[in-house]
Length: 342
Ligand code: DAH
Image 1 (cartoon, rainbow, N blue to C red):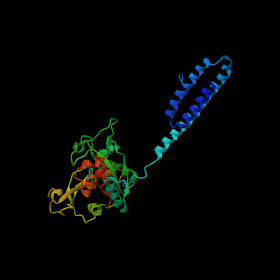
Image 2: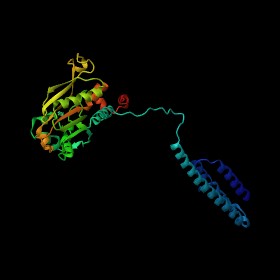
Image 3: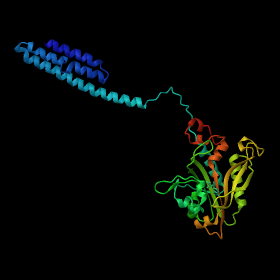
C-alpha cells in the first residue's frame, strides 16, 4: 500500500513536470485529484489494508492527496500568470520583417487648396475666420437682403432642421457675423462647408466648399475687387490669369457679377474643358449692397465694400483636373491621396 502511494506520488511529479498549459493542468487535476481520480482509488484501496496498518496508510495517502492538490494549485496559478503575460507579449510584439515603408498620409485636395488660398489672402492682410455649419434664417437670408418669400430663396434648396435652424447654404451666411464682430474697415475670408438639397451628378454635390471674402473700407471700388481676385487666382494657378466680369444677380450685392477666368488649358481658344467658350465661371462677386452693410452695423455714408464667394470645390477640381465632384466626398484613399500641394 505504502509503495503504491509513493509510486503514485512519483508518477504525479513526473507528469506535473511535463505540464506547460492550463488545459494540461486541468486534465492532470481530473486524472489525479478528481472524484474518480487516482488518489481517490488509492483511498478506496484502504479497505483492503489490514486493520493495524490502516492508520498509517491513511496518513500517507492523505499526505499524497494534500501534496497533489497543493502542487496542482501552485502550478495552475503559475500557468495562468504565464499565459496572461504571453497574451500581453503577443499584443505588443510586432513582426520586424514586415515592410515599414507604408507611406505618409496625405491632405484632402480641398484642404490643400483652402490652405493655399488662405495663405495668399493672409499675405494681403485678410483675417481668416471660421463659422458654424448650422445657422439661422436671419444670417443665411434676411441679413443678406433676401426677405421671406423672396424668389432668390428658391436658388438654394435648403436643408431645414427641426428646431427652425438650417444648414448653411452658402458662406455668405457669415457676412453679417463678421461685420458685427470687426466693424469697418475689415478684410476677412471665411471658408466653409455648405449644404444644398440637390440631387448629385458629376458636377453637383449636396455638400461642397466655398470660400467667402469681404473687404470694407473707405473708397473701395470694383477695381479693388478685380485686383484682389486676379492676384489670388494668378497665385493659385501659378500663371498670369485673365479675368472678365459679367453682370450677375445676387440680392446681397449691387452691382453683382459673375467672374470668369480665361481657360487655363486652351488660353481662351476654346476646348472641351471650357465647353469651347474660352472662359470658366469661377467666382460670383460684387459690391456689397447698402442694406447688407446696414444690417451689419456699417456706416454706408463712409464705407463701401466688395464681397466674393469663391467655389472652393470647383477651384480644386480645376486645379487638380478632377472630373467627378463625387470623388471628393467618396473617402477613397486611392483617389484622394494622389494630390500634393506642389
Ligand atoms: N453666396 C452666393 C451663392 O452661393 C455666391 C456669392 C455671390 C457670394 C456673390 C458673394 C457674392 O459674396 O458677392 O450662390
